[in-house]
Image (cartoon, rainbow, N blue to C red; front, side, top):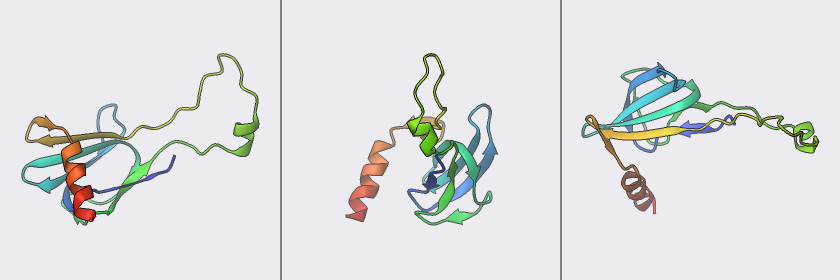
Length: 112
């Protein structure tokens, strides 16, 4: 909850704000016609057209921290669970989805 989401690459912000039922979304373009879509954010930072550096803060995840009373309280049947937020990530080149693992692997190797 409240995790900071940062840009894995230098990029240009192409969209920020609510989108359908994805919550707050930020779309950044690292170049070469690629777009990185990050959705499920509680807050988004930056402005459309802004050029950001690798590691720049893009937003914060939602959710709430568990307090000590939440951890020590006995569980109740059918009480439901706390909602957690999930970061949705999609990499596209033009209109085609791309497996982001190759991009993240290349970033990890460059940092070694």
